[in-house]
Image 1 (cartoon, rainbow, N blue to C red):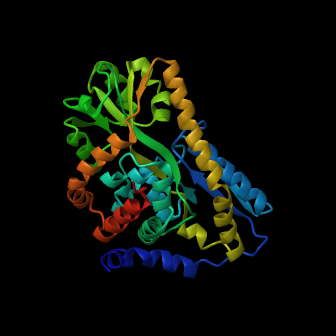
Image 2 (spheres, rainbow, N blue to C red):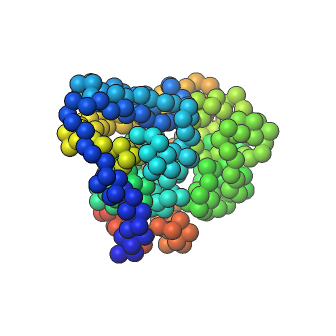
Image 3 (cartoon, one colour):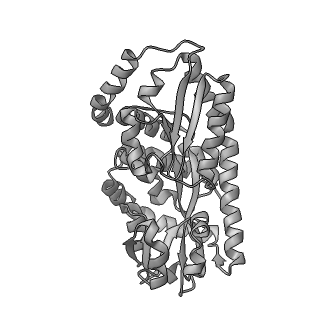
Length: 344
Protein backbone atom coordinates (compact mmCIF):
# COMPACT_ATOMS: atom_id res chain seq x y z
CA UNK A 1 0.00 0.00 0.00
CA UNK A 2 2.84 2.37 0.82
CA UNK A 3 4.37 1.90 -2.65
CA UNK A 4 0.99 2.47 -4.28
CA UNK A 5 0.43 5.70 -2.34
CA UNK A 6 3.90 6.96 -3.26
CA UNK A 7 3.26 6.34 -6.95
CA UNK A 8 -0.35 7.55 -7.06
CA UNK A 9 0.36 11.23 -7.67
CA UNK A 10 3.16 10.46 -10.18
CA UNK A 11 0.63 8.41 -12.16
CA UNK A 12 -1.72 11.36 -12.76
CA UNK A 13 0.28 13.08 -15.57
CA UNK A 14 0.68 9.76 -17.37
CA UNK A 15 -3.07 9.02 -17.18
CA UNK A 16 -3.95 12.52 -18.36
CA UNK A 17 -1.53 12.16 -21.27
CA UNK A 18 -3.13 8.88 -22.26
CA UNK A 19 -6.59 10.44 -22.15
CA UNK A 20 -5.68 13.67 -23.92
CA UNK A 21 -3.59 12.39 -26.83
CA UNK A 22 -5.64 11.00 -29.74
CA UNK A 23 -4.59 7.64 -31.14
CA UNK A 24 -3.15 7.84 -34.64
CA UNK A 25 -4.69 6.04 -37.56
CA UNK A 26 -3.02 2.85 -38.69
CA UNK A 27 -1.26 4.53 -41.63
CA UNK A 28 -0.19 7.70 -39.80
CA UNK A 29 3.57 8.18 -39.51
CA UNK A 30 5.18 8.82 -36.14
CA UNK A 31 8.82 9.50 -35.25
CA UNK A 32 10.37 7.15 -32.69
CA UNK A 33 13.74 8.37 -31.35
CA UNK A 34 15.96 6.56 -28.87
CA UNK A 35 18.62 8.26 -26.71
CA UNK A 36 21.68 6.43 -25.38
CA UNK A 37 24.97 7.70 -23.98
CA UNK A 38 27.03 4.65 -24.98
CA UNK A 39 29.18 4.62 -28.12
CA UNK A 40 28.26 3.09 -31.46
CA UNK A 41 30.25 -0.07 -30.73
CA UNK A 42 28.77 -0.72 -27.27
CA UNK A 43 26.40 -3.69 -27.34
CA UNK A 44 23.57 -1.72 -25.74
CA UNK A 45 23.75 0.70 -28.67
CA UNK A 46 23.95 -2.17 -31.16
CA UNK A 47 20.97 -3.91 -29.55
CA UNK A 48 18.73 -0.84 -29.46
CA UNK A 49 19.75 0.04 -33.00
CA UNK A 50 18.70 -3.40 -34.18
CA UNK A 51 15.43 -3.10 -32.26
CA UNK A 52 14.60 0.24 -33.91
CA UNK A 53 15.35 -1.16 -37.36
CA UNK A 54 13.07 -4.12 -36.77
CA UNK A 55 10.29 -1.87 -35.41
CA UNK A 56 10.39 0.32 -38.51
CA UNK A 57 10.32 -2.70 -40.79
CA UNK A 58 7.49 -4.40 -38.90
CA UNK A 59 5.44 -1.19 -38.91
CA UNK A 60 5.62 -0.92 -42.67
CA UNK A 61 7.25 2.45 -42.31
CA UNK A 62 4.49 4.00 -40.20
CA UNK A 63 6.97 4.27 -37.31
CA UNK A 64 10.11 6.13 -38.39
CA UNK A 65 12.99 5.42 -36.02
CA UNK A 66 16.15 7.35 -35.13
CA UNK A 67 19.02 6.41 -32.83
CA UNK A 68 21.04 9.04 -30.98
CA UNK A 69 24.11 7.50 -29.30
CA UNK A 70 27.09 8.78 -27.31
CA UNK A 71 24.96 11.26 -25.37
CA UNK A 72 24.11 13.27 -28.50
CA UNK A 73 20.73 14.19 -27.00
CA UNK A 74 20.87 13.19 -23.33
CA UNK A 75 23.21 11.52 -20.89
CA UNK A 76 21.56 8.64 -19.07
CA UNK A 77 21.49 10.62 -15.82
CA UNK A 78 19.11 13.09 -17.52
CA UNK A 79 17.13 10.78 -19.78
CA UNK A 80 14.47 9.74 -17.22
CA UNK A 81 13.31 13.35 -16.96
CA UNK A 82 13.30 13.65 -20.76
CA UNK A 83 11.11 10.55 -21.03
CA UNK A 84 8.69 11.85 -18.43
CA UNK A 85 8.40 15.18 -20.27
CA UNK A 86 8.05 13.54 -23.67
CA UNK A 87 11.26 15.16 -24.98
CA UNK A 88 12.50 11.75 -26.19
CA UNK A 89 10.54 8.65 -27.15
CA UNK A 90 12.77 5.80 -25.92
CA UNK A 91 15.77 5.10 -23.70
CA UNK A 92 17.30 2.17 -21.84
CA UNK A 93 18.99 3.61 -18.72
CA UNK A 94 20.86 1.44 -16.24
CA UNK A 95 19.36 0.51 -12.89
CA UNK A 96 22.09 2.55 -11.16
CA UNK A 97 20.71 5.68 -12.86
CA UNK A 98 17.10 4.90 -11.99
CA UNK A 99 17.60 4.22 -8.28
CA UNK A 100 17.17 7.92 -7.50
CA UNK A 101 13.62 7.70 -8.86
CA UNK A 102 12.80 4.08 -7.99
CA UNK A 103 15.02 2.84 -5.14
CA UNK A 104 13.98 -0.77 -5.73
CA UNK A 105 16.03 -0.83 -8.96
CA UNK A 106 19.00 -1.13 -6.58
CA UNK A 107 17.73 -4.54 -5.50
CA UNK A 108 20.51 -6.03 -7.66
CA UNK A 109 23.00 -4.93 -4.99
CA UNK A 110 21.59 -7.15 -2.23
CA UNK A 111 23.97 -9.73 -0.74
CA UNK A 112 21.57 -12.56 -1.65
CA UNK A 113 22.53 -12.03 -5.32
CA UNK A 114 26.29 -11.97 -4.71
CA UNK A 115 28.03 -14.56 -6.89
CA UNK A 116 24.77 -16.14 -8.03
CA UNK A 117 24.60 -17.68 -11.52
CA UNK A 118 23.16 -15.59 -14.34
CA UNK A 119 20.23 -17.92 -15.00
CA UNK A 120 18.97 -17.72 -11.41
CA UNK A 121 19.16 -13.95 -11.32
CA UNK A 122 17.38 -13.57 -14.66
CA UNK A 123 14.61 -15.81 -13.38
CA UNK A 124 14.04 -13.44 -10.46
CA UNK A 125 14.12 -10.20 -12.43
CA UNK A 126 12.07 -11.66 -15.30
CA UNK A 127 9.47 -12.81 -12.78
CA UNK A 128 7.15 -11.25 -10.23
CA UNK A 129 9.91 -9.21 -8.56
CA UNK A 130 10.90 -7.56 -11.83
CA UNK A 131 7.26 -6.93 -12.72
CA UNK A 132 6.71 -5.07 -9.46
CA UNK A 133 9.75 -2.90 -10.11
CA UNK A 134 8.50 -2.23 -13.65
CA UNK A 135 5.15 -1.14 -12.27
CA UNK A 136 6.88 1.37 -9.99
CA UNK A 137 8.95 2.72 -12.87
CA UNK A 138 5.86 3.16 -15.02
CA UNK A 139 3.98 4.98 -12.26
CA UNK A 140 6.79 7.27 -11.15
CA UNK A 141 8.27 8.13 -14.54
CA UNK A 142 5.15 7.99 -16.70
CA UNK A 143 6.66 5.45 -19.10
CA UNK A 144 5.96 2.05 -20.59
CA UNK A 145 8.56 -0.64 -19.84
CA UNK A 146 8.82 -2.70 -23.02
CA UNK A 147 9.67 -6.02 -21.40
CA UNK A 148 12.57 -8.03 -19.97
CA UNK A 149 15.67 -6.08 -19.03
CA UNK A 150 18.90 -6.16 -21.02
CA UNK A 151 21.80 -7.17 -18.82
CA UNK A 152 25.11 -5.34 -19.00
CA UNK A 153 27.04 -8.09 -17.28
CA UNK A 154 28.62 -8.99 -13.96
CA UNK A 155 30.66 -6.57 -11.90
CA UNK A 156 34.01 -7.85 -10.59
CA UNK A 157 37.10 -6.52 -8.79
CA UNK A 158 40.22 -5.49 -10.73
CA UNK A 159 43.56 -4.27 -9.35
CA UNK A 160 46.93 -2.88 -10.40
CA UNK A 161 49.85 -3.77 -8.16
CA UNK A 162 48.35 -6.27 -5.73
CA UNK A 163 47.45 -9.75 -6.99
CA UNK A 164 43.88 -10.82 -6.18
CA UNK A 165 43.97 -14.51 -5.36
CA UNK A 166 41.45 -14.61 -2.53
CA UNK A 167 38.83 -12.48 -0.77
CA UNK A 168 41.34 -11.68 1.96
CA UNK A 169 43.52 -9.84 -0.58
CA UNK A 170 40.90 -7.08 -0.82
CA UNK A 171 41.50 -5.98 2.78
CA UNK A 172 43.05 -2.54 3.09
CA UNK A 173 42.70 -1.70 -0.59
CA UNK A 174 41.08 1.51 -1.81
CA UNK A 175 38.45 0.33 -4.29
CA UNK A 176 36.70 2.58 -6.80
CA UNK A 177 32.97 1.95 -7.27
CA UNK A 178 30.27 3.70 -9.28
CA UNK A 179 28.63 4.67 -5.98
CA UNK A 180 25.69 3.58 -3.87
CA UNK A 181 25.27 2.05 -0.45
CA UNK A 182 25.33 -1.51 -1.79
CA UNK A 183 28.75 -1.26 -3.41
CA UNK A 184 30.19 0.70 -0.50
CA UNK A 185 28.91 -1.87 2.01
CA UNK A 186 30.41 -4.71 -0.04
CA UNK A 187 33.84 -3.06 -0.14
CA UNK A 188 33.72 -2.46 3.62
CA UNK A 189 32.66 -6.07 4.19
CA UNK A 190 35.99 -7.17 2.69
CA UNK A 191 37.90 -4.63 4.77
CA UNK A 192 38.48 -2.34 1.80
CA UNK A 193 38.04 1.43 1.55
CA UNK A 194 35.31 2.44 -0.95
CA UNK A 195 36.09 5.23 -3.37
CA UNK A 196 33.84 7.13 -5.79
CA UNK A 197 35.55 8.37 -8.96
CA UNK A 198 33.64 9.41 -12.13
CA UNK A 199 34.22 6.89 -14.93
CA UNK A 200 35.88 9.39 -17.34
CA UNK A 201 38.51 10.05 -14.66
CA UNK A 202 39.22 6.37 -13.94
CA UNK A 203 42.14 5.70 -16.36
CA UNK A 204 44.24 8.62 -15.09
CA UNK A 205 43.29 8.04 -11.44
CA UNK A 206 44.20 4.37 -11.74
CA UNK A 207 47.54 5.18 -13.32
CA UNK A 208 48.30 7.76 -10.62
CA UNK A 209 47.38 5.36 -7.79
CA UNK A 210 44.35 7.33 -6.56
CA UNK A 211 42.84 3.92 -5.83
CA UNK A 212 44.24 0.39 -5.89
CA UNK A 213 41.36 -1.45 -7.50
CA UNK A 214 37.92 -0.93 -8.95
CA UNK A 215 34.56 -2.61 -9.35
CA UNK A 216 33.34 -2.80 -12.96
CA UNK A 217 32.83 -5.29 -15.81
CA UNK A 218 35.21 -7.03 -18.21
CA UNK A 219 33.88 -5.07 -21.18
CA UNK A 220 34.23 -1.74 -19.38
CA UNK A 221 37.85 -2.52 -18.47
CA UNK A 222 38.64 -3.60 -22.02
CA UNK A 223 36.89 -0.70 -23.76
CA UNK A 224 38.73 1.81 -21.54
CA UNK A 225 42.01 -0.08 -22.09
CA UNK A 226 42.72 0.03 -18.37
CA UNK A 227 45.57 -2.42 -18.87
CA UNK A 228 47.42 0.61 -20.27
CA UNK A 229 46.84 2.31 -16.90
CA UNK A 230 48.46 -0.52 -14.97
CA UNK A 231 45.58 -2.91 -14.40
CA UNK A 232 46.98 -6.45 -14.06
CA UNK A 233 44.66 -8.59 -11.93
CA UNK A 234 40.99 -9.61 -11.97
CA UNK A 235 39.00 -11.29 -9.21
CA UNK A 236 35.90 -12.53 -11.03
CA UNK A 237 33.45 -12.79 -8.13
CA UNK A 238 30.31 -11.76 -10.07
CA UNK A 239 29.35 -9.43 -7.25
CA UNK A 240 26.26 -7.97 -8.94
CA UNK A 241 24.48 -8.04 -12.28
CA UNK A 242 23.90 -4.73 -14.03
CA UNK A 243 20.80 -4.17 -16.16
CA UNK A 244 19.47 -1.68 -18.69
CA UNK A 245 15.69 -1.17 -18.64
CA UNK A 246 14.02 -0.45 -22.03
CA UNK A 247 11.27 2.13 -21.75
CA UNK A 248 9.07 4.36 -23.89
CA UNK A 249 7.74 7.79 -22.94
CA UNK A 250 4.10 7.73 -21.85
CA UNK A 251 3.49 10.85 -23.92
CA UNK A 252 4.61 8.99 -27.05
CA UNK A 253 2.89 5.76 -26.04
CA UNK A 254 -0.44 7.60 -25.90
CA UNK A 255 -0.07 8.69 -29.54
CA UNK A 256 0.09 5.10 -30.76
CA UNK A 257 -2.88 2.95 -31.63
CA UNK A 258 -3.21 -0.46 -29.92
CA UNK A 259 -1.64 -2.30 -32.86
CA UNK A 260 1.44 -0.08 -32.79
CA UNK A 261 1.75 -0.43 -29.02
CA UNK A 262 1.60 -4.20 -29.36
CA UNK A 263 4.19 -4.09 -32.13
CA UNK A 264 6.74 -2.28 -29.92
CA UNK A 265 6.29 -4.80 -27.12
CA UNK A 266 6.29 -7.83 -29.41
CA UNK A 267 9.46 -6.87 -31.30
CA UNK A 268 11.33 -6.43 -28.02
CA UNK A 269 10.01 -9.74 -26.68
CA UNK A 270 10.99 -11.58 -29.86
CA UNK A 271 14.58 -10.30 -29.79
CA UNK A 272 15.60 -9.89 -26.13
CA UNK A 273 17.03 -13.42 -25.94
CA UNK A 274 19.37 -12.64 -28.84
CA UNK A 275 20.36 -9.28 -27.37
CA UNK A 276 21.18 -10.93 -24.06
CA UNK A 277 23.34 -13.56 -25.73
CA UNK A 278 25.20 -10.82 -27.57
CA UNK A 279 25.84 -8.94 -24.33
CA UNK A 280 27.14 -12.10 -22.67
CA UNK A 281 29.37 -12.83 -25.68
CA UNK A 282 30.77 -9.28 -25.52
CA UNK A 283 31.79 -9.75 -21.88
CA UNK A 284 33.45 -13.06 -22.69
CA UNK A 285 35.26 -11.60 -25.69
CA UNK A 286 36.48 -8.71 -23.54
CA UNK A 287 37.76 -11.25 -21.00
CA UNK A 288 39.82 -12.94 -23.71
CA UNK A 289 41.26 -9.60 -24.79
CA UNK A 290 42.23 -8.75 -21.22
CA UNK A 291 44.02 -12.08 -20.85
CA UNK A 292 45.89 -11.37 -24.09
CA UNK A 293 47.05 -8.11 -22.51
CA UNK A 294 48.42 -9.93 -19.49
CA UNK A 295 45.54 -9.55 -17.03
CA UNK A 296 45.51 -12.51 -14.64
CA UNK A 297 42.04 -13.83 -13.76
CA UNK A 298 41.15 -15.68 -10.57
CA UNK A 299 37.66 -17.19 -10.28
CA UNK A 300 36.46 -18.06 -6.75
CA UNK A 301 34.96 -21.53 -6.35
CA UNK A 302 31.14 -21.70 -6.05
CA UNK A 303 31.45 -23.05 -2.50
CA UNK A 304 33.68 -20.12 -1.51
CA UNK A 305 31.22 -17.63 -3.01
CA UNK A 306 28.35 -19.31 -1.18
CA UNK A 307 30.21 -19.12 2.15
CA UNK A 308 30.95 -15.40 1.68
CA UNK A 309 27.37 -14.74 0.58
CA UNK A 310 26.06 -16.41 3.72
CA UNK A 311 28.17 -14.10 5.90
CA UNK A 312 27.03 -11.07 3.88
CA UNK A 313 23.37 -11.94 4.47
CA UNK A 314 23.76 -10.98 8.12
CA UNK A 315 24.00 -7.35 6.94
CA UNK A 316 21.34 -7.51 4.24
CA UNK A 317 18.51 -5.88 6.23
CA UNK A 318 20.73 -2.92 7.12
CA UNK A 319 21.84 -2.53 3.50
CA UNK A 320 18.23 -2.74 2.30
CA UNK A 321 17.22 0.04 4.69
CA UNK A 322 20.08 2.24 3.52
CA UNK A 323 19.12 1.62 -0.10
CA UNK A 324 15.48 2.42 0.81
CA UNK A 325 14.24 -0.85 -0.67
CA UNK A 326 10.67 -2.03 -0.14
CA UNK A 327 10.88 -4.58 2.73
CA UNK A 328 8.28 -6.96 1.26
CA UNK A 329 10.05 -6.95 -2.10
CA UNK A 330 13.38 -7.73 -0.40
CA UNK A 331 11.75 -10.68 1.38
CA UNK A 332 10.16 -11.95 -1.82
CA UNK A 333 13.37 -11.66 -3.86
CA UNK A 334 15.39 -13.34 -1.11
CA UNK A 335 12.92 -16.20 -0.77
CA UNK A 336 12.73 -16.71 -4.54
CA UNK A 337 16.51 -16.75 -4.87
CA UNK A 338 16.98 -19.15 -2.00
CA UNK A 339 14.36 -21.50 -3.48
CA UNK A 340 16.19 -21.38 -6.79
CA UNK A 341 19.41 -22.68 -5.23
CA UNK A 342 20.08 -26.40 -5.54
CA UNK A 343 19.85 -28.54 -2.43
CA UNK A 344 22.54 -31.06 -1.51
